[in-house]
Structures are given as C-alpha cells and as structure tokens.
Image (cartoon, rainbow, N blue to C red; front, side, top):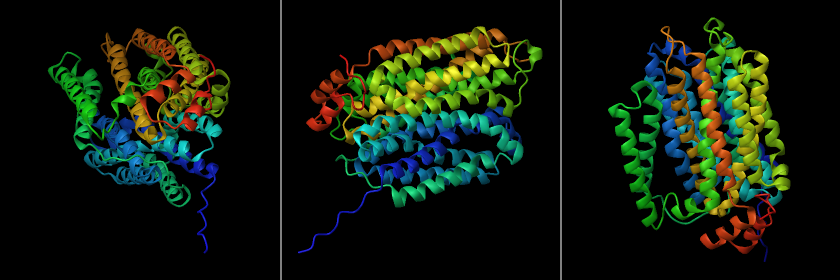
Length: 492
C-alpha cells in the first residue's frame, strides 16, 4: 500500500518575502495621501473640510476590519484571509486611482481599510510557519516595516506627484499588492493552527460602533471643538457602546475578542504602550511636515516643499528599518520589555530636543534619526510581546487589536496636537511657534508615560506562567515562551 507524499511547505524565507511586500504596500497607503491632500482637493473640486474624509474613511474602515479579519484568520486560515485582505487593498486602490469625484475616492478608501488585516495576519503566519528561533526577528522586521512604510509614504508622496500625478499614489501600491496577492496564493502555505467558533456579529457591530464614535469624535474635534455637542455626544456614545461590547464579549461562548485574553497582563500592558506610542508617532507624521513647510517669515519653519520636508523625515524611516533588522537579536539578549522602555525613553529625548532646538535643518535630521531608533526598538518589541503573550490560535485577533489601539492613539494624538498647535494662532491663521513647541512636548510626555507603562510589562517567565493559568497552552510552547525564545527576557 502506497502512502501519499506530504506536500512540501514553502521555505519560511519565501513566505517572509511575500508578507513583507504586502505589509509594505499597506503601510505606504496609510500615509501617501497625507502630504498631498491639497492637490487631491483641487483635482476633485472639493473643500478642505471634505477632503479630510479621504483619511478619515480609511481610518474608520481599518479600525473595524482589522480585528475582524484577524479573528477570521484564526478561525478559517490566516493565508486565506491574508489574500482576501490584499484583494481588498487592490480593489480599493484601483477605485481610488480612477476616482473622478470625492465620493468615489472615499468608497475606494473604505475598501482599502478592509486590508488593515494584513498586519495581524502576517504576524500569525510567521508564528505558525517559522522556526521558533526565527520568530522574533521576523516579527520585528514586519513591525518595523509598518512604521517605515508610513514614513516613506510621506517622503515619496512629493516626488511621485511631481514626476507623475496623484493617481500614482494608488497605482504604485496597487502593483505591489497585486504581486503580493498572487505570490501569497501560490507560495504561502495555509496555517495548520486554527480555532473553532464563529463570528459574534453583535459583538462586531458594537465594536464597530464604539470605534467609529471615538475616532470620528477625535478626528473632528479640532474642527467642531472639544466642547461641541456633537463631539461630546460621540464620546458618550463611544463609552456606552464600549461597555455593552465588553459585556457581550464576556458572556459569549464565541467572542470576537476574548476578554480573558485582553486581561492577560502581558497583553493589556503592551496595548497601553501601543496606545501611547500611537499618540506620539502618528501625530509626528501629521504635523512635523506642516512645521517644516511653514514659511520662515513666520519666525520658524523652512518653507520646505512637500518633497524637501519628506527628505528631512527620511532618517527616521531608515533608522527604524535598520533597528528592526536587529531588534530580534537585541530582544534575545536584553529582553523585549527592556527594549520597549529604552525605545520610549529615546523617543522622549528626541521630542524634547525637537521642542527646544529646531532652528536649523540639521536639528531636524538628527532628531528624525533619533526618533527612528526609539520607534524601531519599541515597535518591533511590542509586536513580539503580543505574539508571545497569547496562544497561536489567538495571534491574529490579539495583534489586530494591538494595531487598532495604536490607531486609536494616533487619532487622539493628532486631535490633541491640532488643538495645541492651532491655539492662539496668528490672525493670518499661521500657528505660532509656541504651539508646535508645546505640541512636541506633549508628544514627548505621552512617550514618557509609555516608558512607565513599559515597566509594568511582565518578564518572560512570569508572563508564561500567567498564560498557562489563563489558557490551555501546550507545555512545549509554554517552555518556549518561558525560556525567552520569543520574549527574549531571561530574568525575573
């Protein structure tokens, strides 16, 4: 009797290359349009207020679909849902590229937001397919790529529009996404680790409701005013819907987001750090280019073009990528928790330096590079900590919520920064230098709180013991976590 041969699984390096291209394209789409909103506004014949929905629609859609696709991947196959996420990104990019009106552009951006699930799904595939000793390094590089891609989007937006036109802000990622989707379908193996259950659609609806209410309030507060009835009403609705969501999830036999998982100390502490890092990093991406593009006649700024301001931020993206390459080895030696705290403190120093010294372009180049080191250390380590803190069948949904919480932090940070920068603006509407200075100090304060929160993250062995109590994690994987293979922390 003959035995059918076991199918050969693709080498993990091939899988990694495919994941990296998909995640890089997703990261670029997060920020490519940000510096050129005025160009899109003029091309589509809309107002400055309305064109911001090109960003808001994407943000809201991604916040809803990221954890849902992570959960679906855990249930039905991470490779399958990774391809679905890439297809959504491709369709949304195609629609946005050919859009002749703001409404069509917004629909395209909503469809793109469905692709937010590529990040947690990529982490899940890495955990399932890679040798255990390769997981920290691979997760670290993929995590760094998300922030590097966001930074490169700001850098590349100007040259793309100058040489081609704004439509290519979507055509270029579309080419990358299409290649990644085809490669993922044919080359990436389907994960053998899945969880039973079904989607709790009531929980999904409540999750969507409170996220939309919170992010809409945060994104519109600088325009409507923090004390306006609409903002207060949305914030109250967000709190009520979030409370109902937690109640429904806690009582569900098949929760969308397992509340027991969210209460694991290694999960909620890293999520808190992610929230605070979102405040610092994404607000910096949004407002530092504006600061650099301010005409020097205002008493600060350099009157830089979109391309020039992007190049001044380039050291941040380069430093993040380089640090991400070595983050896994550093975590094995010093512990991922230590790198989170160190990365937070480095970032605090960079924002403090930016607040007090920004009169020369060299100041910005140096600060940008320092921020890249801090962000790179922390982002790579946070992703590794989340992956290691939960069982394999919950990797996607846990990573998805961590990414979502970072997005929430980014929305809140941008809203706070906008309120601080625009307070006491000159009659011409140009913000005062003190507005930016106070804003940079606020971002540094958020990352100082992140360093404090990082101290609460449990060490590897303590996290492993707690995970064994909270879940039915097999002893073999528990031993891997306790030994520091993933968390990289040998100490108590």
